[in-house]
Length: 216
Image (cartoon, rainbow, N blue to C red; front, side):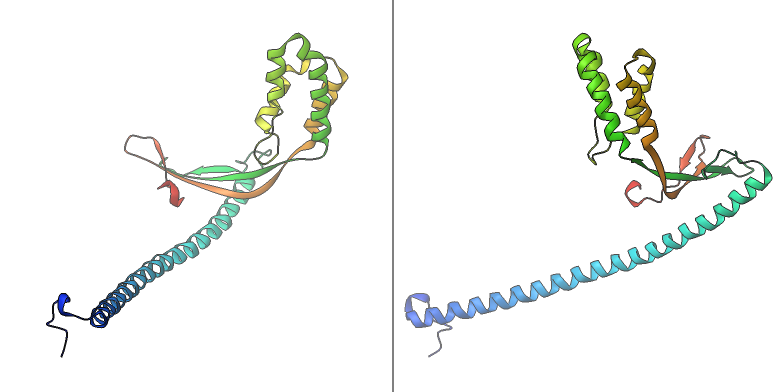
């Protein structure tokens, strides 16, 4: 006799187990079905977004190449026309005749401190510890702070340059030599040319045309 119409009180232990196994199997099938549906929808979402992302990536790559070529041609034209400063290292802006559109080519550089900076810091710190710390602790801490390194283990150019505001205050050879070596040790290397695009809004103010995804 089928146990379909039986109440649980009338079932044997084996029949109860059979019913429970059937329910567990049905639940497992339903979970697998829901899992498959979810994963299929998820995969479609990933695929749709990635296809667009790859398309925009290629478009941006081509646009960047276009900017490089076009702005380099413009740089040559500016140089020949005499409108680019002889001291320019490649960064410049051009604005259209209406005064409403502007393109800027930035010269993005990477700072570099060579081995002389290590010796420079040693000399300056030695002088500050032996001399300035004893007579002006506040000034000592300020000047030492200018030599602090960032998270990459490099000195910060803007901070270090603050030392030169005090250059003429001290005649100690370690101080003078340290500052000289710091100047000699610092160079910048061209990392890439960056570009900025602006147009004027109704209020007459420049507005950035943002191509950085996270800035939109």
